[in-house]
Image 1 (tube, helix red, strand yellow):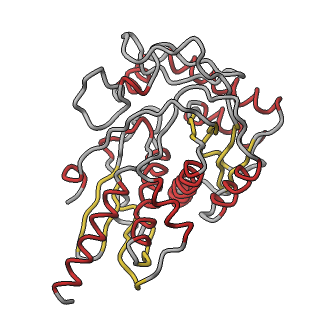
Image 2 (image 1 turned 90 degrees about the horizontal axis):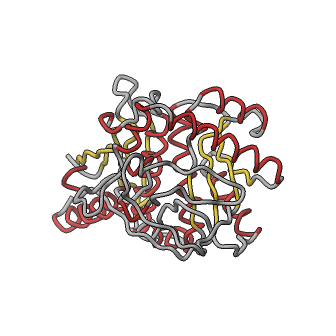
Length: 328
């Protein structure tokens, strides 16, 4: 490899890593690290950032890392290289989730460029949406985006089913709020005003009081026992938006990673059309409630994410750790 090619590859690798660092993750815990060897990036789980009580198996951690892997793939394609990916390449190294290296030269298509442009703009929403409708054609497109990565995104259309999902979320949030250990695990990632930390949920990204939606979807209480957070306007948006379930046919580590990639592809496509997402994982952190959802609402498939999709004009900032903290 000549010097010019090596420099070009280094720039591509750097751009891909910057994109990976912008992926969504549970509580913005950013539970990943990367190692670079030549033209190859290793994606590793940072188990010190795992939610030990609410996510003991690491399912949400791997979904988060799957989203980062999708960003790596997308950025490489936009830099003109086809990524070559191996998922879970070494059974003896469970923290090594994937390797991705530069393959042949390739010209990115328009859709890949569209998704790549949204990586920096995408934000997680933690309140209600406006009453502006999410077009059915867009929802169907998101279904197709998720399917392309091996997962199923199902919009919950029946009002009765939406109320069931909302009630399960509210029940799980209530039970978890009574558990001091689980509450402390959540507020570990709540950042006070003016915090210099580059992970977790900053104070301007969550409300002091849980945001109201119709029907009511319980929010994480990042303001537990303190008065950090923002105060909602009296005229704040309250629509729950479109409720959707992301599922997989199995429940293996490989399928958790695939779910993360499917989630991120759908989120970026939604963002390109002005639609944001709010996540509700409380019920999925309680095995019996997750199993109820699987049997009663997911046609036997395993629910990996509960989300609401809608339109909001309440843009928030984002914090991310610098690459120097992420890359070996």
